[in-house]
Structures are given as structure tokens and as C-alpha cells.
Image 1 (cartoon, rainbow, N blue to C red):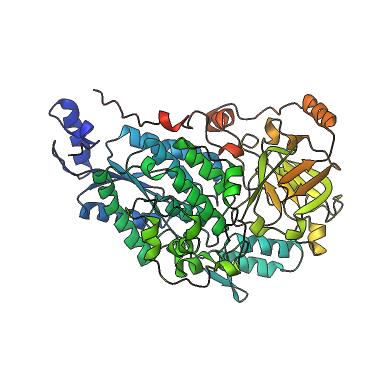
Image 2: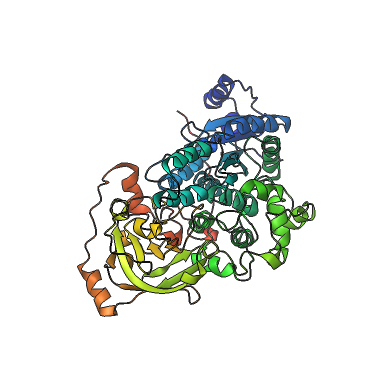
Length: 574
């Protein structure tokens, strides 16, 4: 019979075990020293500061009911809620903090299994990183996307259409009245972005990894299906404990390979190219952006969802969701991989429904060779990423003079200057905005088209940055240039007028100056002094890895798969 981890706290007759049982009884749960029921923690990241995660409150209650019905004991606890809408400079700054909170809450408490409730984009990878490190039976429950509003006669995708209409407003194509109407239109309810932003991307990838129940990652916020799925997840969490099925049994090389191919097929967020290596690193698997790019070879982009396509995530869900999409690319997947449901991908896709209009067939794919490409060169020796499925093909081979912005304030302060020395051929460069530089690598990479060019009808330009961009964003933007400018990377050495050449087909991003000049600039470079001398930002800057390595902390990455072991907590007398 499996010995429950919680029995280290609750079994026995001494004063310590009695005090533990008293603590549990004080919250309304009576347990005996030999109680066979597993204790299932429910990590609830809902918060009034984060409208994306508010649907999780109802899902937590449904999950509790499922745990009880399956013969377990649910204990709910709050966690930090990472919301991209309000957190500055970025919720990404706190992803590693939430991952640590999840891991340490599990380590220090009598939990046999855990449900992690997440929705907004940085919350999802954080909880997966935490449970991967803690390695007790775990299952994720996603909150779903918000409702869809209609603006000027057509459905509005959160994020993507905001960026498009902002450009229209800046260019005078949308007047002040229309801009105000859009603001009210976008206030359409709680839940994650309803495009293929990072939230929907990471929800789908959580399902693809096998860490969520099949077919539920895109269930709309507040839907009956979402509530029923949370209840089922609660019951399944109890079964996972009894089966002793843990995250490291699920998060295998094959699971990550499948998931990267799914990322390509959905035209997913470039932020996942940072999150997936961070999750993999917690289980001792090295996953590089180059490997992820190469896994996209021959993968068709089939999700006809903004920003790569035309429709919204609700359309994708009603078209069959991930099981149907996986069936369309089944020849590219390892189908015997099993997730938390206990079913293999082969079994899941066999039971999938009909394909709807938001999931294309391979003959009508948006692209045939994946949705993103990694480039290298003397401007990004460790790589940069471009989302090719949402960029302009005519700019994939381009040479132009650089216009450099050193930081977000510099960029926002000058981008609308009518005297800005810029043409449509200019390459816009934003540096010092990477993981160390801000810190936290905010989503500033989709530099707005300069106002005078936008007014002239220019809709896209080549942009290069060491920051990220929202998964709802689009354009010919080379992101995550590594190493970043703030640690001496070449991007921080670029000067106005330097020629930059991009060649997506050749996977190159180069600064066209000679090696001696580049070396001289590097030798003269002085690292900026950080204003952060204490607290979390200082710890972050001291230990965060570069984008090419997942931006986890150097002391949290598992060194090798052989060294992985969950260290059970020492239960001492107090």
C-alpha cells in the first residue's frame, strides 16, 4: 500500500502529530492518525488585481468537490497572481518567484498531490515549473478565455486588435470617439485573452505536455464545460496520488518534442520559446531555441486564430480544440505519450470530434514549415527569434540603417517625433530591455511604427530587440536577442546608422561592421549601474539566465536528469 506523504505529519501519537491534526481540524477537516485519504492542495491564483484569473474562484470550488467525491481531502491555499494587465514592469519578473512559492509550499506542507489553478500567461509556466521541481502528483486547471465583443461590426480579439486599432488611432484612421468606444468594448468580462496570445498558448501547451485533462485547455471562462473539467481534475488528482504518477513521469523528452510541434502548429506565442526551456530545465532536460526552431520543420500552422490567422480562441475550441489539431499532425507526434488523464495521445485523438473551421487541414495551412525561426549572427550570438507566421514575408531578407532606442522611455519619448530620422527601410533597435536590463524583460519588443511613417501607410518594419512581445502581437520583430545589451551583448553596441542585415532563410542576423570595430566598442563598453540594490529585483538581476536558457534562476535549474530527486521535508519538533 502506498504510504502517503501527509502521514509524515499526521500519523503518530506524539505531541507533534497531535498538533498537526489539530491544525487541520481547525479548518474543518477531521483526520485520524491512520486516515487513508490523500490530502490534495488546491493552489488558487485568483485575484481582483488580475481579471484574467478571476474565473479560477469558481473552478477552485468545483475542484474541491471533485476531490471529496473521489475520497480525498481538499485544502485550498492562495498563491501569487501574475497578471500582465496591471503588473509593472512585467509579470514575467515574478514568474520565478511564483514557481518558488509553489515548490516551497508543497515542500513544507502535508500535501500528497496538488491542483494548480492558473490562467494568465506567466502564471501557467510558473506553476508548471514549481510542480516539476516539487514532483508530487499534480494536475493543472486552466481558467479559459474571456467573452468576445463586437466593435464596428466585427469580433474583437483582445491584444491583437488593440494594437491594430492603436496604429489606426495614431495614424488618424480612428477618431477619438471611436478610440473611446473601443475601450468600453474591450471591457468584456473576465478571463484570459481570446486570441492565440501567451495565455491561450500556454494553456494549450500545458495540455500538450500532458499536465491538464484533454480537450479542456481552451474551454471558455465560466462555461459549464470548464466547471465540469475542474471537478474532473479534482477527482483525477486523487487517482494520481494512488497511482503515484508524478510530473517527472509525464514531462519527458517525447512530451516536450510533441509540445514544441504543437506550438508551431497553433502559431503560438514567442514567449513559449522562453517558458518551455524553463520548465524543461526543472526536470533536467536541455531545450534550446534552436532545437525548438528545428522541430518546426515540416510542421503546418493550422490554427486560424489571431494574430497569425483570422479567428479567435473560442472558434478554435468549438472546432475541436487540441485533440483535433493533434490528429491533424499525428504523423509528426509520438502518440504513445501518456499524460495526467492516463490516456495516450493516440487514444485521445481517436475520440476527438469533427474538425471545425478554425483548424485548417494541411493543404490550406497558414505556413508549412512552422511558426517561428531562430536566427544567429554577430548581433545575436546566442540567438534571436522571429514569429514568421505573423511577420511580413517581404522583409525576411532586408538590409537597412539602424535607429537605436536605449530603453523603453527613450523609445516612447521619440517614436512619434515628426523629425525622427527614419524611413521605411530603417531597422528599429530597442536595447537594454532584456531579463537583466529592466529587470524582467517586458513585452516592449513590438516597437510602434513611427507616427510619420504610420500616417504615410507603413504597416510593418524590421525591428530588433532583447525584450519580448505579447503573444497577441505581430510584425517583423526579432526578439530575445541574446546575450542582451545590458550585460554587454552586441545589441547594446549598435549605433545609429550602422547597417543591419536580416536573412530569415539563412537564419542570420548581422551587424555589418568589421570585427575590429565591434571588439573596440565592446572594450569601451561600461555596464550600467543598476538602481536595484535590494529585494527581489536585485536577486533577479544577480541570478537570472539569458533568454536562450529560459530566464530561470541559475540555482533552480536541475543540473542533469540523474541528479533529480525531490527532497522530502524534515519533520521536526517545534
